[in-house]
Length: 342
Ligand SMILES: Cc1cc2nc3c(=O)[nH]c(=O)nc-3n(C[C@H](O)[C@H](O)[C@H](O)COP(=O)(O)OP(=O)(O)OC[C@H]3O[C@@H](n4cnc5c(N)ncnc54)[C@H](O)[C@@H]3O)c2cc1C
Image (cartoon, rainbow, N blue to C red; front, side, top):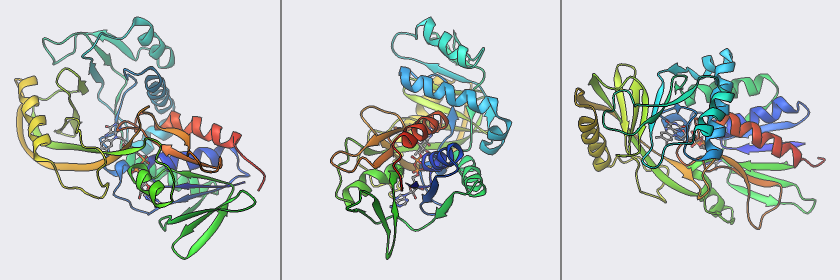
């Protein structure tokens, strides 16, 4: 069986690696530029188990449990444990939700007063959470994929043809190669690629993600999301990463022009939220895009009107660094169930 995963971001790299690990007879190719300035490279890398959505929470918790269970993965990902605080604007999670998280990762989550956030409702406080470097994890996964016999091509995919025998031919400029299964995991470039291939976007859209890194003293020690203000952040060495969600959809993923209003909102909210905080100037502004879906989550999705041998694997909607380990395991199992003889 010949499988091509298009896009060597964290999602594509993990999926190709999982497939090859599960079936060493599968010919697995990972196609995409070698040192991309993509969502994975830009990612803030916050990993925690809690998400308000039950399916995402299970995936994030399973991913975190796998990270905690593997010294190798923690090393590859550069995991740093800072803990996490998640303040919900709506009703707090049910005790059974936290019990389910603790069953997967013992002692991982409690509902408690949020340390460092006076006057907020009780928050989900996780001790065993923190941040990773998604770019470093991707690099190590690609290196291991090659060690276990996967293939890597670096030319961008420009076309796709469905052959009479049902196989799919991928075109990279003048070159082309046939595959039994193709997965488009091009992150925020996926909606544009689908359109260029004459295929439906099926609700996949791009959205801007921006954060700033500041010099800071007396900032919070943990990663945090405060839904009551929309501010999120994490310690960043001896600096502080701060962001607020953007509402800009359908952006060009190659457009990296910062939005000053977003940076201003984040620093103003941080000053109000943490009265003791001494916030210095922004030393870095990171602007990128991610691929969003109305039913958020990094999933294998069929493409309407196209061959059943073609899927997308994206739609993590700004949060797939924390779910990618579990999501790629599930997707690899689904993909291998789709296999057809070469
Ligand atoms: C600024 C920012 C901060 C984030 N912070 C967090 C966080 O703190 N925690 C969290 O859980 N998640 C976070 N996320 C989300 C998470 O990082 C992303 O969901 C995840 O990295 C997406 O990975 P991906 O592989 O789907 O996409 P990408 O990393 O964008 O990879 C897509 C790849 O496809 C390639 N490609 C494009 N077109 C083609 C083509 N035609 N042919 C071949 N290859 C192609 C691109 O070069 C790229 O390498 C953040 C995202 C952003 C943008």
